[in-house]
Length: 628
Image 1 (cartoon, one colour):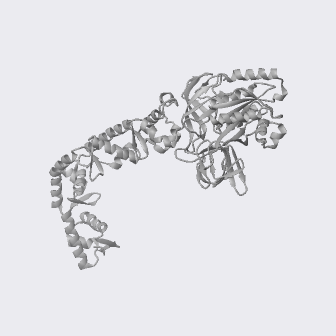
Image 2 (image 1 turned 30 degrees about the vertical axis):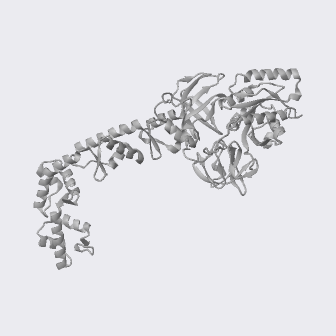
């Protein structure tokens, strides 16, 4: 029997500066997460720290230790994204402090599901004071949407409470849903460095999916495909990166200075950097002022921090919610359903957060009119996106990113979108858009017949240019149009024409075409130009009719200005071959004397013979071609 699978999850600390987060992590894991000399000298955590925490019984946690100093909240945000269980650390001798509130708000905005409030430094206070601080903390957490356990007092110095904390973490992990491996791989990068023999190494918490050694990942927003040379988790080699784990990827094909915190490693379709997000925003009740159109903010999504402007909203008051569009000053990578935090531009404080509704919104309609809130079922949201996309449609492979669904759920979501969505190839397009395109195609055909009454119809290339749609969508427009009898295919499927148009064309050709053909037969080698025939017959349809007769095989085009009947051209070919058989070579003047033609008629016919391979030029003379 094989061993039970290991369940993996990420624990993140949060709390005020000097409340004992790093000491707690070291007491739990044995790892000092203060990596930098400056951190040790100043006694504070400046950047993110990481440590493994085996909990037994198939539970394996990664701990992210974040800085508590207000000047390093952006580093805290980079670590807080992607955690499964939060440890809200509050020093028992001080209680709730300003950064406690800000970190708690960030955890709530990021949608962290579960947490354990930890009262550290219990060895410094008596029981009465500890009970008072615990009561105050419980009262605050009762208002939180996070499922907080009762506060637990611990001492990193004496070890009191650590065993119970480990037990609580194990219990919390048992209630967590598994992060599916059958998802798109995504690793928001929080550190980049170079290692001799390994090359460029990136680290982060694997949000979703898996990738194996030897496979490729795409780095965004640099948009580079690179190979994974090796994988480590907390210093141990691994063959595959798994969701819910701290992961280091050694990459081949990218330099260390090309990457930075905020970049992302991904696999699969649909990913792209974006500079526009449609979002649902939520302002903190304690925000100093409303956010309105053109307000400049800082957006923290994953490990990225990007400046942005708020658009398509009047004002969102503190404590209020609204849909808005964010115009980003630098590209980032997002997926529908992602949570993010916003901070004011200056002074820099946390003021709210939200959920990404669409990482690639169209210019119109406004986000408030789109009906794509995350409270709506994915099938309904897909139907709206497809409707907005018109004939461009939505690629099937983009659905996991655009809707925030698992790749395996694509079929069910498409089915739930209803009959208003048509699938053609790998493109989803709205039935209404197809119907409107059929109407446009019918109008295009009608206008073409009106302007060119003897032309066989509109070429398929002309329809493609009119619709500016993918080839698969054009094909389904044609199919629907033919079924609806809006038009029909002609000329072996090469053109679209009005149903029954062939009869009208044949009638016209039989009348005027017959007279044209007789005129050209009488002309023999003295071929009139198209313009001369148009004046002679006083009929603007002459060019189209000549082209039609050529397609029907009655005429042959001599050059851009002339058509001739085929028997006349055959006679000219025979006369030419006979003359050259006798003369060997001949100049135009010699042909003129022998055939009795002026240069006006002779030269076009000689050039026709050259193009047909009957003759070829040698200087100013012509000789028979070897292919003749």
